Image 1 (cartoon, chains in turn orange, green):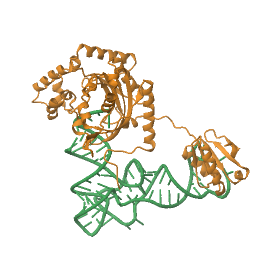
Image 2 (image 1 turned 90 degrees about the vertical axis):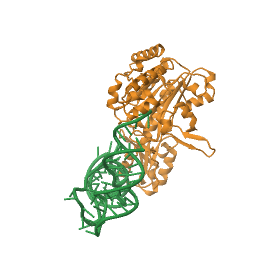
Image 3 (image 1 turned 90 degrees about the horizontal axis):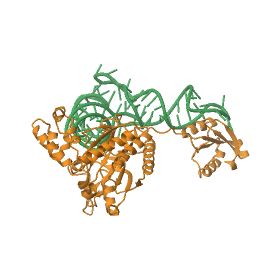
Image 4 (image 1 turned 180 degrees about the vertical axis):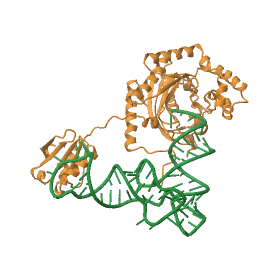
Length: 403
RNA sequence: GUGGGAUUAGCUCAGCUGGUUAGAGCACUGGUUUGUGGUGCCGGGGGUCGCGGGUUCGAAUCCCGUAUCCCACCCCA
């Protein structure tokens, strides 16, 4: 038997209900915040991700579905959504057009990782990107939008917040951190030694207890922010307080993608196992220029749909539509004809076999129908049918023409 | 990529130290004496025991390999 590839799932039945329920809900929230849908290709030039996500990241370093196509192009399936949207933004010359541009998207992302609960090789994200605003109010709006979506889904969460600084304060901080790491280098784990070279900030959230005990003395980025970053971060907290959004400051929150600056945030759930991040995002003011666009401030986030699916509280499904059946073979053709007619406007379930009244009732329940319609030999003769409302149990007899 | 656990009917699982035709609940399906359900009663179908080897008179059960899922590391959505 041919099976689906590792880490790649089919979405159907009840899962699909939840999947589309979330996308519809999130899309309508995004539209209320003034965002417009954007669809970008699943396949992009590999260079796009190397330049945006960053060569030092795990995503680019070891998780990309990368290959050479028949035209000798080095391409890869997108591992995340932001890079493609930024590429489209620049390619459509919206950077030169100026103004504010807000987009939302949803679709498949691909990462060649070892699958586990909440971590797939093909997964789905819903995300938004906002271009042209350096105001911290936009950062706050992003966070409130995620909170809005999660609230409407009935999902509880913790919000973790940090500031990563900008090109004024981050490089200085990085240097001081590297100096610190070198001072304790003999005692830290192998992973941290590697991180010191690739992405020194990442040592701070090392799980190794010995490393953690050493890093208590490490310089904190939060204490090294320049005045602009500091005041934006303070303002962000103030706006969130003002709007009733609870958060925790996590000075070790480092986003895995190189392009973030200033505001970084992550929404986590304690109910879905170790892959607990359900949404993450932040500001990326330098990315547009890194990709050869005119410098444009930007901020965005992405949500992992599969991780949200099991947390979503679905609204109760009410019985809807019609069930229609025949009690004898002679009435079946009439039943089919009436059903076809009714399908112009309503959901109709038809049973093709003649059955007893009781058995048809059971069928109507299984179909989740609101109205039960049945035709037997008596009804066929008189050109009528029995219509019963299964919710309030009222029953009437009507002529075929009235159906 | 590294470690550990699991894999038996559509689903959730039982099957003791290897021993005749592998079970349960739910689901599905038929009937319940032609006419009122979701919540009655009786019956029925459905399993190459993940896959491939090996040990044995005999393997769902023991051993090896392999695939997938789960957990941890790593990382992120």
